[in-house]
Length: 141
Image (cartoon, rainbow, N blue to C red):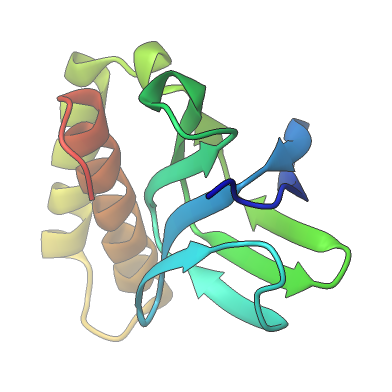
């Protein structure tokens, strides 16, 4: 059975990285993994850093993948809007660079005072670089 396509846009602070029709979206919110199909109930959710999968069709060759940072998802009758801090093709990720960023985030977290903005920022960075590293190494969320 063919799935109904719906409009989806992925926006970062730098602009649109995807604007097309898809048949399914797979991502992760603060409360867990979510799959979105056409005619999904209206929704507004907070996104975790994860692999964002946009399915244009039934085959794996028709899946557009992004390593996506924190953000928001809005599902409406008009389609789905994903606002994320950043979105990169998994092929463009540099494993060595991600390991360096993860190490710096872990250092910042261990030296930050609990409950401070510095601690919260380092924790968010650590989660993002861990997720991006898993994606770059070929793992999924």
